[in-house]
Length: 142
Length: 145
Image (cartoon, rainbow over all chains, first blue to last red; front, top):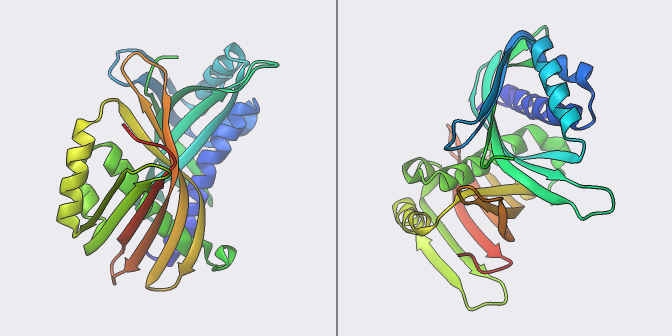
């Protein structure tokens, strides 16, 4: 991989991190801005037919995720680790990352809610990377 | 220790390879895992404060064979999550990086469980085309079932 591509790798990982931070802090406007206008997002559970979405378009994605956030006030952090960029060109990439979702009720010890993985297709538009597709697969139902 | 802030871009490429390695391990895709190793790669490991150890296994085919056998005997969806990398060497042709490890496992219908924590120390060499893993030293904090 050429050095100029490596800067892109950092930017793409930063996009993933910005997404989960935006969700966890309920900054939905910031979250919407991380998606391309026609992006698609969905969630499913491994070895199960349970799924939500797909949501089409950044506005629908943001509105749907705002509802998910509001319904789960004890969720504290979507911690992303171990990112792998599987394809990379100057203006497009595929990336995946592991997820550990933690929750914490007031006065309680934090709990690991679920693990899973994000798979994303991203592209560079007007100098910044955006999600074109974002799929979350959970290892168990929540 | 190398100043990682000055060489961050190269560091990211190295991390991409070691992250790819654990994804292949979790998915039991050992042919893909082997392709990330140098032909003469070596690995060994130990569980701290126990008499459990493994290796040293030498050669990419032998490493893949041993890991296939281990992974095939395990149940649950495994996630080797790597965090907190520190580089001890990072040049045009060599890299040494140490990371923390959390192995999480989810059985069907169950909540995820922490199997163990630990650390890996990876040594990599860069061929003209790509970074490959030359050595892996694993140290787990507990026994791994």
